[in-house]
Image 1: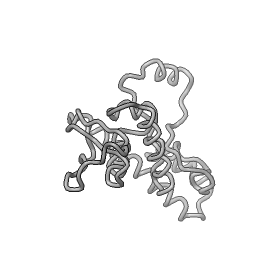
Image 2: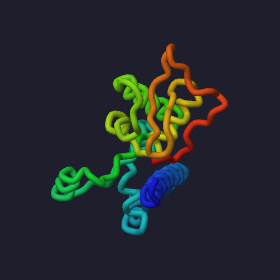
Image 3: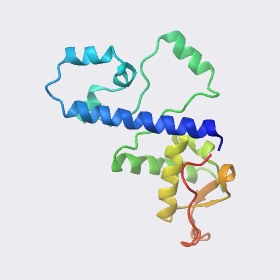
Image 4: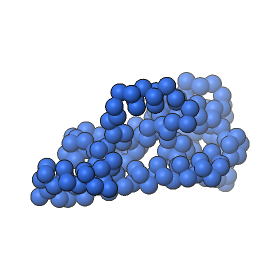
Amino acid sequence: MSILKYESAFRDAVSERQRTICIDLLRQSPELTVGDLASLAKGPLADLLASITVGDLTGREPALVTAPRRSAPAAATAAATPRGARPAPADVRTPAARARYEASLLAALADTPGFTGVAALLEKAGGTNLQARAALNRLIEAGKVTWTGKARGTKYRLVSDASPARSPHSSPPTSPRP
């Protein structure tokens, strides 16, 4: 994996963690007023706060990481240039959300005959490269997925009755991977 891909994956992970910490701190500060939040939103936390919904704070809906709303021309430009665009991270903050994401990866693998790479799985299940590889490693440990190859050549598939998972003595691919 090139340094730029690692840097991007780490930046995404740090950004997601910052968002989680911000939501937790806001939940622990019920004395904050809307005016206080408006003041915070004008400072260096503006982009971070713009991605948080009331549902995230109340816990009444999953805390999905969403990009701040953009103007129509910016959104049209982003849609016209998918190459190099970062995928939207999946919600994997809670055990239930991780289970849903793992189920979507299993469904994507079930729809794909033979071994497949992470890029194809991301197209079907969403999430980031780092999230997919972490989830796939958990599925390998659970014996539901097997893998072959190394680094960029790592491919995954469901474990079937005719093809047992790799030996427990072989380690799953390390995360993150290209």
